[in-house]
Length: 246
Image 1: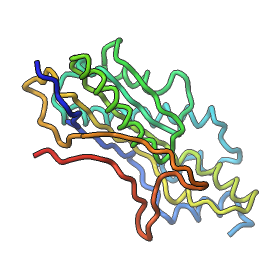
Image 2 (image 1 turned 30 degrees about the vertical axis):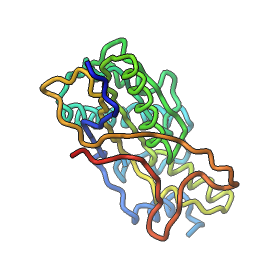
Image 3 (image 1 turned 60 degrees about the horizontal axis):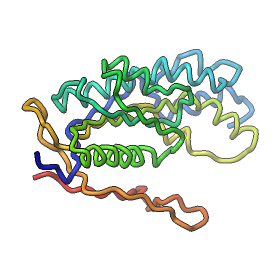
Image 4 (image 1 turned 60 degrees about the vertical axis):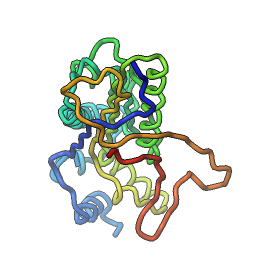
């Protein structure tokens, strides 16, 4: 059997939690907790207005309660979009910066999705804004390795965050240190998923590639304060090498 020269994205999924917190919620939270100063959870949830700041363990418990179901919904969407058998998933690459548990959420997710007990899991943690691109590169490398062995491979790539759980902690730091932080207004909760294929042993039920990934490379930029992104007036640019499938 001829070996494919590319890795393809063949399924996508995206899941947001049911509650919306608009910009007007931040002043409400600030006025309640810091009266002398000018998500996955609804705006009236008791967590927002309790006196104590959540510990990392408590935040992680909330991630397990709310974040893992988000990840499962996004993953199931991607699997349905792909059209293949979940038991044919050979690799899982998971990414988060809002859960620090061990084993990671990928372990529980694989159980909930009914994957093979031999599925190969890779968890990327704490990579922040570059995490999804790093996860895509990792999945690409893993599938290219399977291609070199002449083995069929399908990977679930899943990114999940519950950032809003940490808003109280952020605001507490802002209040105590008087340092600006745009995090509470920029980031929200959600999960996204992709299914990648190395195009070996493709079954009739699997969809045609959406995109073909022709290469992946990371670069260490030897410049103080530079993290490899380019800030423009209206957008942050990240470069990913890809070609549409025709």
